[in-house]
Length: 441
Image (cartoon, rainbow, N blue to C red; front, top):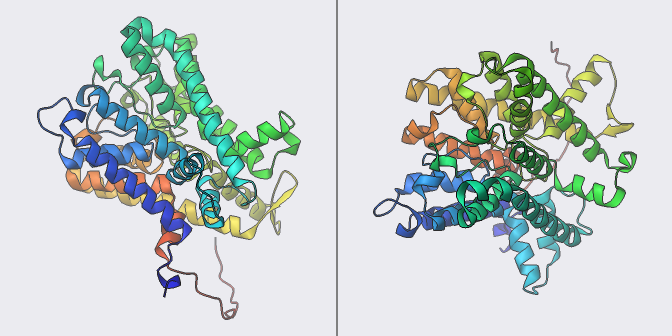
C-alpha cells in the first residue's frame, strides 16, 4: 500500500516549485510587502511569485514602485531559490543542519541539477551552491561603482546585490522603475561596467553547473570535457554570435556602428533567458523580433539557472537532421555517438515547446485582440523563462495571465518533468509490435 502512494522524484521537484510559488504569493500579499494601501490582489502576487520562482522576469506590477524593500527581498529570495532549484537548496539546508542525506534524496538532487550520476552528488551540490554565492558576491561588488554614485550607499548596495542575483539567476527582475516604470536597464545602455558585468553573470549562470564542474576538474583542457559540456559551449557561442551580428548590422539605425556594439552584445546574451534590455524592443524590426522569439524559446543549458528547452535540445535536433541528410546510422558529435533515447527526448521537447508557443500565443491573441506576432513574443518569453516583453503583459486579462503563468512554470520545471510527474509508474513493456514502414518527407 505504501508503494502505491510513493511520490516520484519528478513529483517532488514539481511540488517543490508549486509550494514555493504559493508561499511567495502569500508573503507578497502582506501589507508590509507593497507600497499600496492594504495588500496587492492575490492574482498579481501569484503572477509575480511565479515569474520570480521560474526566473522569468515578466511582471504585471513594477518591481521598484509597487513593492517595499520587504517585498523586493521576498522576490529576491524566490529568484535565488528558484534559480538554484528548490530541491537543491532544500537538501543543502538539510546538509547544513546535519541531517543524513539518503539515496532517495541524492536521486532527487541528481534530477534537479541534471547530473549524469548519483555518485558524488552531495559534493557537487556543495560546490555549486558555494560557487554560485561567490559569483553573485563578485557581481555585486562590480556593480557597486555603478549604483552607489547614482543612488547613494544604502540604496546603491541593495541595487547591486539585487541585480547581481537577478542576472546570475537569469531572472531579469530590475529596480529601475524609480526612473521610469518597466524601463529595465535602458538608462545604462552606455555603461560599459554594468553591461559587461551583467553579461558575464548571465553567461556563467546559464551555461550549466556541469560545465562549471568540468572547468574545475580540467581547466581549459577542453578535450577532456564531457560531451554535454562541449555541446553546451559551442551551441551557446553560436547562439550569442548570430543575434549579435544581426543587432549590430541590421538594428538600431539611429546609432553609429561603434554605439551599437555594446547594446548588440547585451541583447544577444540576454536572450539566453535573462530578460534585461538596454534598448526599446518595440522598435526592433519584424525580422529581429521573429529571431528573438526563436532564440528565447531555446533558453539556457541543462542544470543551470536558465529555463527554456535548452541548448542541448536544439543541438541534438540539428545533429539528428545532419545525420539524416548524410545518411548516417547514428547521431554523432565530437567523436562520440549520441544515444537514441537522447535523440527521442530532444525531438519530443522541441515539439512540445513549439506547441506551447503557438497554442499560448494564438489563445492570447484571440482573447486580447492583439497581433499574433506580439503574443508569440510574450509566450516565447514566458515558456523560455526570459522575461523580455513588448509591453503588453501588464494589460492582459486574467485568463491570458494564467496562460503565461502556466508557460513560465512549464518552461522552468521542464515539460518532460511535468509529464513524468503525472505518470504514477512506467508501464512494463510486454512485447514489441510488428514493424511497418511509413514514408516521411
